[in-house]
Length: 185
Ligand SMILES: [Zn+2]
Image (cartoon, rainbow, N blue to C red; front, side):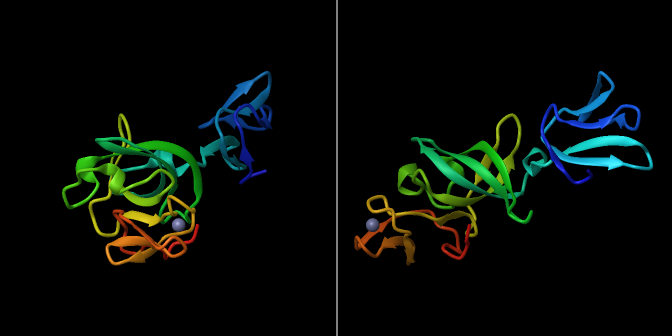
């Protein structure tokens, strides 16, 4: 049973055989999971543990994450983090974060909507985890890694400092990452 993914409330062992530990509790002679994660039945210590599968709970400053822009406001972009880079790009469940206009680019940004659009996939750096997750995309390696044309939804291709839609023969501005287009999700 070790390595199995369990959900909160799942029966993972019986109290006669195992002791509850991190992520588990005992109820009516059964050991139940208190969270979603990976089950570990320690045969030597006779404990049943569940480790959270979501590496975002251990998000720390400096981590590189992939997010999807969900909303753009005057002073910030709002996004959902869906993966932490370097952790096998594991899909981790979504988590809300914001990028303040002052942390968006190394250059002065007047209009957040000219740099990011809802639906854009970006790479960002974690600069704060509590009480809310704040991200920065100032450095060259951070910014949009994949974006679609606002009009026809074709993937945009890089053209100089901007992005181009071939079918529409239109150019859109973005704060793009230095490896735009090289990442496959
Ligand atoms: Zn287009």
